[in-house]
Image 1 (cartoon, rainbow, N blue to C red):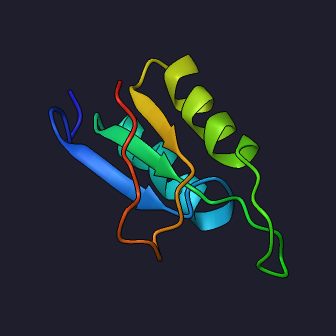
Image 2: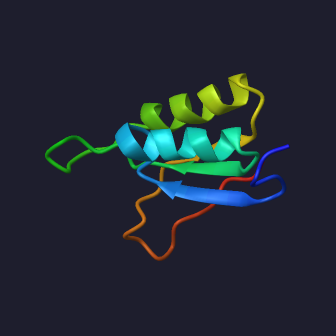
Length: 83
């Protein structure tokens, strides 16, 4: 039984680095995780869905619940995936 069973966590920047590790830890503690990552380059341009998708898949492969979201959090009209 995890400390966060039944809770939902939204982690921005969760496709790589510290954000990814935070998302993995929250999932190990029982939270369902929305993995948000725009996947931009180091220069801040473009986008890449793979980092968020890979982090969400890693959580699901370990038995957790996760969905990927690729929206920029700088936009008010971002959509949240079903699932």
